[in-house]
Length: 352
Length: 231
Picture 1 (cartoon, chains in turn brown, green):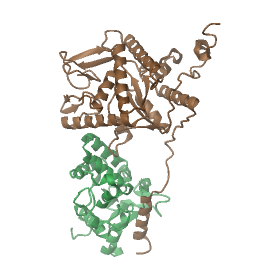
Picture 2 (picture 1 turned 180 degrees about the vertical axis):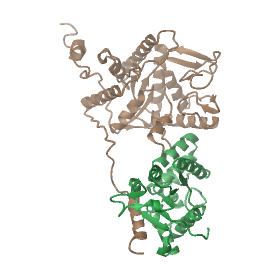
Picture 3 (picture 1 turned 60 degrees about the horizontal axis):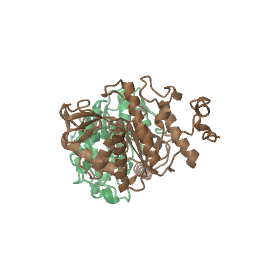
Picture 4 (picture 1 turned 90 degrees about the vertical axis):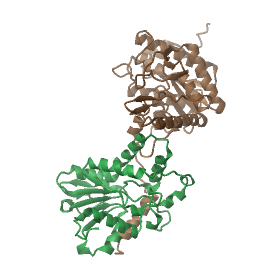
């Protein structure tokens, strides 16, 4: 007898992987939490997180959006203006230190600076530079919008049951003079790069781990029931400042983020990890879930990841998810339609 | 209002045609009536087929209409500005005064909403049918009654951005111009002092109806139309 004798099939590569088709590899996730369709879930983080919110909504789960678009804004324009992409308009929160920064602003532990980036007469929020497609019309409008997002982020923390966070990057940019972090290097989308105050930092394991843990602890202080599901973005870096080849930088960065997520998940019953990164990136997938640029995840990959998420929930807890058929519109006369018919009958009917 | 004879006009409308019909009946005896009204409740008129100078639909119309015989086509209501019993407009007014949206987002929302209306979609069909050179004019639904704000506790303190009605007019005119269509707001005399709602004095006194103006309101709309179409 040895410790491997009684292990289940999924502990052995040959049985769990090599002898199976890539589509039949299962039991990758053993969900810690019983997420009901009515459970309120918020999603933030790197860009892959937006697929989780969409998938939850499409399957009848409660994806909580705390910053709603103005009435009438179409789905296409919502994407353009970053409504309903994440649970509020934070834009991408690539790093755990950025998550901590947003959390501190939301919980009044610190206040955001008034810094604003100007480009061709329009104003950009350094902390959400792509949230408004053509920038804001004034600094005041930009600051009001940011305030709204911070309030909405607080609402997401206090009103949700599950906080899904997708870890995206280790590479980051800080303003060393005042001590805060940007999601993008100043001078890329807008703003101006100043080597005297803008500093690159490739975050290491302990920095990432402690910031994430700190953010989680702050959030659980105001919402004790809040649980976390971590994922790592499978999307490779678009560019690196590390000095390494971008492929090496990608693998190193994802490995560190994955290790942080693993350690926190093992040690904390309120944190789970969902393996979207492995599903897309493992050798078994043979790169099939990437677009030809080998960076963007294609719709089949997104669907496969999200199907795996809901399949695991169903297998463990019997919670089924059904994709809503958006093509079937409800045909039902509203009270207003009935009032309108009466109105016309009276005017055009036989009482002329 | 001009004393000349108004040009021949086809009015295509939803339930808002009723108040107009009352006003026309008072004003004109049938042979002199320059207007032909076709009306159907709700947004269905966006389904009308407009081709080769004819308006057709197997169920919405009794018989095809040769619209090229008219000088003007007025599309009245059909979800433009206010729909869903006025509730959607209240939410738009709330958003416009809330101060939490960028002006670009609000403008996009206004245009997206316009493009989704039956009114716009029908006007576009006339634009795409090159067989007639009728003048096409779109008029919005009346703003909901000012009394609608009392229906919901959260609406009572809505901050009204009075300048927004002018902004909407500019945006609508500009979008409609792209499809060779004129847009005009309804007459100012219908407005309450809140500006973005209709005064209750011009409204039907019917419980739960915040969408439909009365005959007096209809007369104001008729005069407004006559100002546009009388040479």
